[in-house]
Image 1: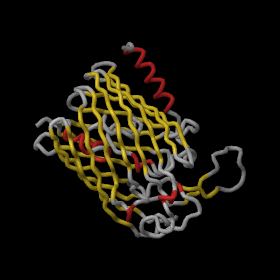
Image 2: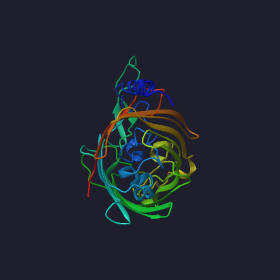
Image 3: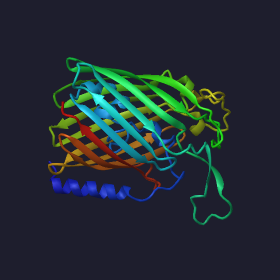
Image 4: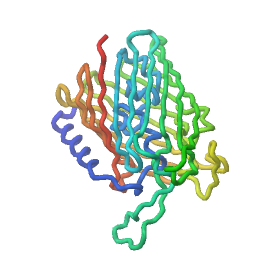
Length: 344
């Protein structure tokens, strides 16, 4: 196994690579980053973990994992995305007081929605002329709440849940004087199991039955495998498929206040994302997380890089996380998360 000092150096270089400041709207992901941020430490793992993380992240990413880890945990995270408003996420998971594990998660933002169109200076510093109108990647979601349940069945774990989404209408460009919102519910499920004591596999679906709020809650399918080397390290391989969102990925489309209206999202290609990540224990409390992946659709592709530094013990974890959605740009999504394990 690689010496801990060498691993620490590699992890430190990765984090320093991710530290440059963000550039608004330039190089932002295809859809708002809040859409795929599942909470907890998931950003450091590349934003897509179907088998590697329990706790708050599991409520959306794979609810079956809540039944796998027998703990009562509370987690909060604050995000500074590459574009749009800062947002926060809180989650509570109880897998300890009952045979059926339960979890609740909430995502919100304090600032007002910036609208679909935003005035943004050209990213080229040599460009002359007035500000141009660009496509904002600010999330239209006012609040997103999810509730999930999970149950163990031998070496297999099953989970299911639903989400409530309230968002500003996708056609609104200037929202300051408008109180219009769209509300809707979606469903999801997940399963996970052990092939061996160290090897775990899983599959999940998020935001099914999302027709009314598809533009704010696209469907995600996730599948993955994780290999755990005790408490020393873990390795994860994940695949994620995301439904296309016409208001951000379509061209010259017309929209209505519900669903995608005249914009046919199914005429666009889904985004496919393959991600590899690892968590390595350096000292008693310190872990380094590294991840890299490739997001690709017919319209565009991007290589991602992510990582984090975490302080972890039995009662808490505190993590700095960063994700560069595209290595071709300097834009970086930063987050801090704090998790508490309640001893009952």
